[in-house]
Length: 219
Image (cartoon, rainbow, N blue to C red):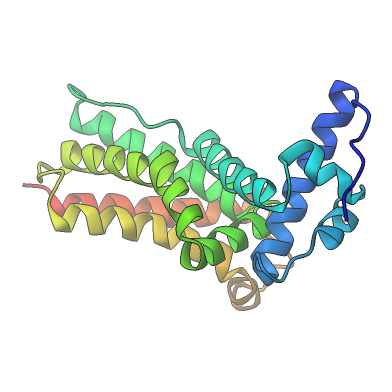
């Protein structure tokens, strides 16, 4: 069955439709997987018609890839685009790591905005080699290298050392837990929701742990 091409949309309308389809992709691909998600359900969740998926993305596969790229862009907006920090002082490196960690916590845990995106990332990085490679190339590997460089500057350890790579993974992983494990955290902390106050408390706890780890690792 083929779908007729849609007439051109106005700029705002087209962007809204694209954004709604990407959000629908985060939710449905993340919850059910690529194969089990139909274009009909994607269109219904986005409040549009099936032809919109072909019009904006070329089909379901194109939407799936667009979701991965959108996730990489949102992460970069929260934690900063990877860059080189040669010549930075140890104190400035710690400050950069703290800003990155606070940005990551803010993106991941505040409200429900990131819930479906994180679900998509967790599922697809394990299920889709193509998505995992795209995310690796566009944000995960470059950002990890940058954070390893900052950790190295802050501690004096070699940036390529296994203990530095693992320390960075641990820092990021702790922030991710507060998204994935949020229902458990909320019950134990007796929080009705995770808003600005709760997010700040989480960030302060993780920053304190990061600073302790850096002090312990300094040479």
